[in-house]
Length: 258
Image (cartoon, rainbow, N blue to C red; front, side):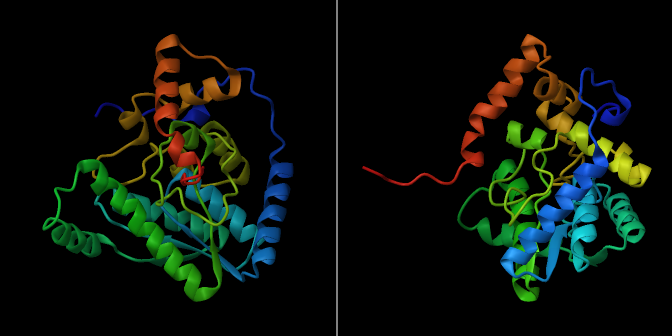
């Protein structure tokens, strides 16, 4: 699949306003505390994928609510040992609880049963992984008076690069307004492990999957467009096409109305 993309943190993003990350930390921690208090929740749960987004969400939530736990949920074998090690390293450094639930056998059984009624497409198969993970998070949340924290970012949201009712489902999202570029900068400010910052972004939905290879564009190029309005005509067309066809994901389901 070619060389791994250069992490955005190491690429130049011109004309980007300097962010006060300490202020961002304080505001987001206050938001999380208020959200949990308003819901009467005593803890938070999130999916610990070993990636950048879950790392930032875990750090922010743990800072705000001590009883924060990240669930590692392997389904594919895609670099699982690496992802688990990275997720565990972040959790240990910032004192975040870690649990592991393997969903591989559950998914295999589900696919076998579905084979009797339909031919499951590659896309449906991949989306199933994200939805099984969300079922797991909500089961833990409902059993332990926790809220589910979302881990999606602005870049993914604009492209529609998330699974509806999968990783797109959550009770609140403390990083949804941040681009991938900004997330890497925030993590660097917080002192997150280098391995998390340098690895190629992936939802780990199937073996060998990376976000950028699937979309056909880098996050640096997407963020240059979102943050600075700079983009080639070809990339603008690609980005806006992704955005248009995924509009339904960013809205509540439509209903009949006269």
